[in-house]
Length: 455
Image 1: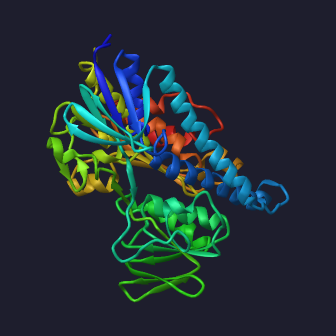
Image 2: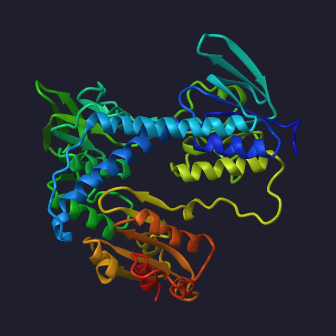
Image 3: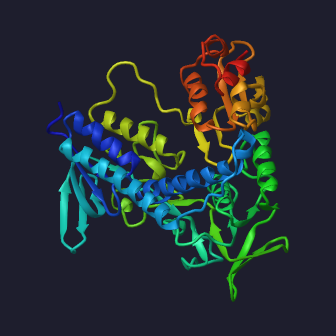
């Protein structure tokens, strides 16, 4: 037990509450300082609401294809108030669950804004203006991120929106231009189109999801075009202006999109301003805190985890970083230990169809000259996809031709976010394709495509 060890966690998002929970279980005296919402603003005010709306939008899309399953089509009408209440209920429940867990473990929770005084003292300004200085042995910075706003536009929360302005929904726009075609941009394009909006997606490169497998991007592009989404490929927005009844988005190639609303989905910025990092000499790079493999900053008792660390901005990564920090605070892991390998983190995109990938990408391997074996199986070859009346997409597995070790994979199709877990486990545990191939999987199931791709 480490009853004399003290840890201050600044930010109660996925990284912060994971670290606080594990450290408290190991006997550390933990204080969490949170200025917005326990559970994380980026997580509960961005991720959870958007995925809730996407789930509802996907349900609407599903009803449109009922005739292909021998059922009569029924038009689904969205109840905006009910959807808003659903989002708020989920957000509140998740936040309350985090608080209940931490309190039950003896974690002290302070609502306020923290600033580092030095490497062992944190000043907290409470909502009423009162101040408290906390002495500590270790500090974890896990303050998350916020939507990035380019210099050429100022969101007004009415017609020109950041992603965080979009929920809870007041209305669904008649038409919307989405600036940015990364993960967030394509998810919002799918979401708004599902609710009946006419969508224009400004794509700065020659494919949506730059950096992802071109075959994966192509499936999504084809789906978007079939659903009436306009793609402005190779265009960058340079101005967004209010008009009498909407907005006008001007691109650098001369194309213009006039819609009722515009949404900025062009990344995020770390919340590191005002933390006093300069007071103690914590090294930063572009606002992100530079960390080593133990999540330690340039000051060894000050850690960073989650979006502020500049690593993959995924809740799963943040939570794992938080747990690693807790282990380090109590003296390091006991027994066998695997360092966090960010290249092996699975990620998913909740479009229609879903997209997920993990590990080495095919294009990345070819660019580096690495020899790989690529096997691809379409879902149309599985009985379950035909039963589901949805045969879009495929499973792709990348392996080492000499050893058979699974190096990565991509999945496009229904439940891709769930199915990728099999490949993620194989990548993390250095399993071989034969380990997947020889697994006795359920029939009929979409997962059968995994064993076929491993064959």
